[in-house]
Length: 427
Ligand SMILES: [Zn+2]
Image (cartoon, rainbow, N blue to C red; front, side, top):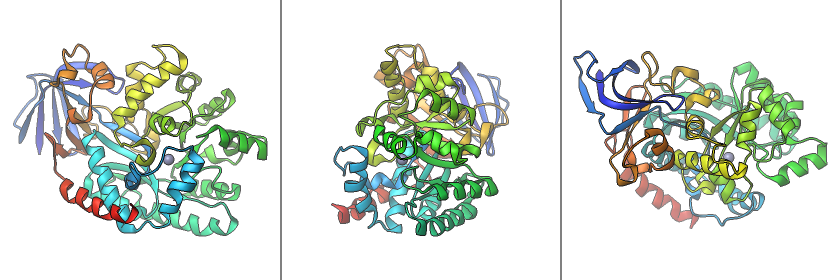
């Protein structure tokens, strides 16, 4: 199967824009990217790319997909009260069927908003993995380990390890796995040491939450004399590739530690704003050499899985925090939203660049809407002006998942109806 996308503007991994290009997809890879009119046929299909932006597609580096179940449900509370009063009691009642359908619901939303890959930690992960297999996206999946007492350590590790072994490399290599101790405050030190050892043995990354609230940092300092980042480093947790969600309250010393160990910090601006956790010092982290990427966190706190919203908010809040309009440029916001900074999820630079030989993941965004006109700079428009409905087509591994707004792998009507029905139990 050879597909030509004709005469489209292409946004590169660093945000550079090349107008009027012909892009050929053959099998699961880009075969050629050449100036318009130069692509060599024949083609099985031609997609008109004029008035469109072809971009690498977004990477949501931290979420809990099945928490679409919680969308609009919980009150707006500080993190610990939100977890203890609104989330954990409901999660006790969750079933595998809930996770399956609410994962599918999240996948519909992610495809519609141009996400091609994501990192997810939750429960009943086999259900999420099967949903990913069906939907056609890429995902780094992990079982969320909670082990605040010694008796939980072995059973939780076994569960996490079994899932990670079984699913790593599944779905034509679209699924990778990680180990996920939930956070420093929900897992004992012994768990962290053992989980890191297992991650090293299985050659897997760790995906966790770090320094989300000031209260978390103060408690850890009071108990151990260290910040959560220092504490994790002391346990050797950063000796394997790590995705650290949030990093809202990190000191200069913490930033140096994160940079030295090449930890990927995942900035989740909507969730942090909604729970009033604070604004992560993204510009400072970048300056210190920390790799920063973006996530939505679960839709229970962010309200949405639309990574374009996070990209915009990251640019806006980053400027506001520094009181400097140049603190986070559109190019930097875009690179945080794509594979450029998300190598820790797997796939390295195999995806995230529209170039001959790379795996064919990408999105086509329409520039026709009034809010996108006159269209001087496609990248600036994509960061500050585009909305979910502008994403018209999405493909992963050369396979179309959405074609001109029509979902090809998932039955949206059936999924939304089923989720409404299942949610009755939680009203
Ligand atoms: Zn989270």
